[in-house]
Length: 434
Image (tube, rainbow, N blue to C red; front, side, top):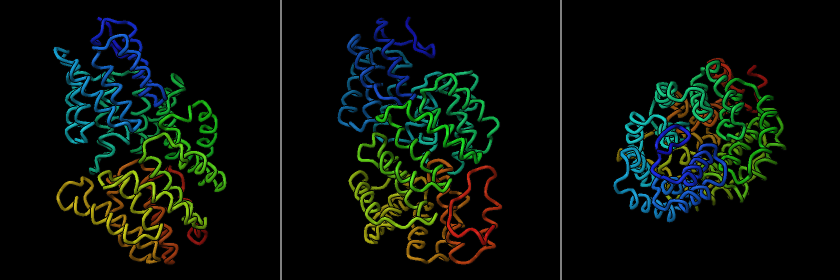
């Protein structure tokens, strides 16, 4: 019986199909281009290899080709008659995922890894802050991700893929000493792991190692294909480090060339969130507004997100609408979110609408209302989705609102109470606060 890289039996007798399947999975796990072609090679060698078809479906989903994704899923289901229990469970996980059934998909993942903990492709769907736990909108999801991955650590040992994700999860809850050896060890074993680079960028942010983050990203990014799914987001991390260093021009060069570029190859919500976050942060740091940039990213949001449903994207879209000065679009978007929340179909509840109204208040110069809206939701800001680096936008906005309102003692208290270690908040007008 042939096995994959994690020792799990694969339902093919063709070594060519097996080897190509392993290549495809590793390309998905490292976020490098070429997974689709690798799965095609596996299918050519064995057309009845169900896992290769479902792997191809996942690659197609990530590239945004949803009709072809559904076709590949249907083929996987058709050729899986009489397949192993593991194969059937694996396919069922992806069926839920592709149908947008995130709660059912996560439940299926948990059940699957109880039986096959080393099925890394299934585990990858919930292993990071952009996965089904990280984007759940639920309270305690940061600790929940650590609790999910921790019991699996003994199954993976010194595996580079697992350790970069577990390391980042540990870093996000402040366990930096435990995170560092896992992340650095992962990169030492597999330098060409975009998720490893991503985890290291977050570690540098959380420990305040701005210059190390800049040096690492400038060294690592040339190794990565521009068409890689994380290229845009990783350049955002470099742009954020440059912003924190006061290098606004360098940050905007990256904005124009990479993470807000027309040829951005990553997930559409990454381009949206990274562009919006960088523009807003740059303004908080004192850079003048470029209205044309806001209108362009608002148009992108309209084209790619016809309706709300993903918290991380939704609050960035609301921010784009208000910054572009489109009050009607803002109110319509917010009403759609609030309707979902009222129907119990929005896991993050009222946190995102409240954050959106805070941004709108700040935008119109009503800093007191912005403060009143942000302060109560700060303890639950993880429900907005994304990493701590991303949701720090709320603290940065609150800090600027305090400065603009001359509420300097509250600004000092916010900085004093901020979690220890992370990079500072680049906000204009802080001299009287320090």
